[in-house]
Image (tube, rainbow over all chains, first blue to last red; front, side, top):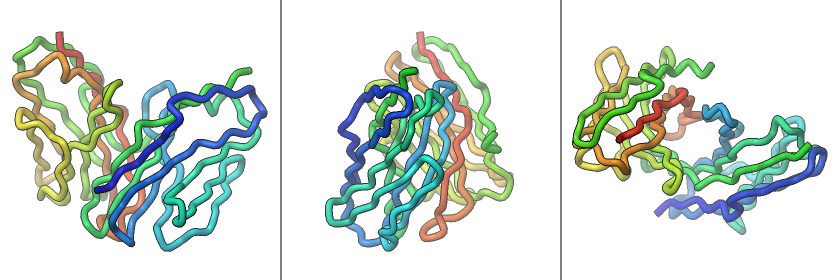
Length: 115
Length: 115
């Protein structure tokens, strides 16, 4: 069965520090998709990235980067030079799209960036 | 603005009552997903419709039902409400399915409070 584990419930860092949010997933499928979403205090869910299981290249987008390692079933998210506006709950998610489209979310990591 | 519209934004109702939550997907999106977000359970997948047909089902209670209409809007019906049903209910839409599933765009959510 598909499962996403975000072991870090809450993290606090001081502004400008780098921070990594961990995500470990479980799936029986060879074809799957991994996602990260951000939920700021306003409550909406904002898509950040999708990665398919055949693409293990790391991705960088500005201060955000993602490290996908199939060998450890992990899809970690790093924010470099964090800013107060990065404070939010971050969700990692998994879809076994060959089976169905449901996107299963981890419980989220609440990130506090302290000024 | 994600383009997904959910109404109402807030709903307060009494135990035992029935409510209907409405979702209008982004223009062109055929898939609609419903999620429940509560403090203890995180984001739980409830159900997905694609072009009017049920495509995937999660941990949706028998007291809950959903449908997607020919104009692609969807409604989530919650009946015999209990205090524990108080949560934020999200609707999301996506364009594709299966390997064409990219990102799901989330609405602002309906906050349901059962008193």
